[in-house]
Image (cartoon, rainbow, N blue to C red; front, side):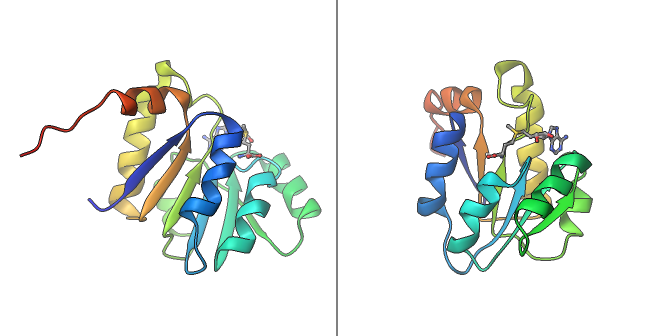
Length: 143
Ligand SMILES: C[S@@+](CC[C@H](N)C(=O)[O-])C[C@H]1O[C@@H](n2cnc3c(N)ncnc32)[C@H](O)[C@@H]1O
């Protein structure tokens, strides 16, 4: 598996990761874009970006406020629909409400594994303080 997972705590870290992880060759997918505030910050650093959210109302507002950027309705758990959006995504940003705490850690790890298996991006940047805490305490035993 080639995908790296980057766990960030809070929206400031999530957005600060853009300049470190996104480059001009990237096709980027944001999952949980709400009104597109972060999608717009990603756009100048990459080849193309698509912002997505499960809420049709959010996507409608994102389209109105940010003409020229592509926004689509997508349920994060419908990984096939994400793949069908078109581009081979090299970076994926995930900021889905309800998925950042300890109670949802297994669901989040399952989601990350599905995206890394099916879409095979180089990196998934996720807003989850729980995953960050967990990752800091993990050491992979060398084999
Ligand atoms: C904290 S907001 C995202 C903020 C945005 N990333 C930003 O930086 O401005 C979380 C978003 O997750 C969306 N969401 C919740 N469940 C979702 C799901 N299953 N699939 C996709 N988006 C979901 C919500 O509609 C909400 O807009």
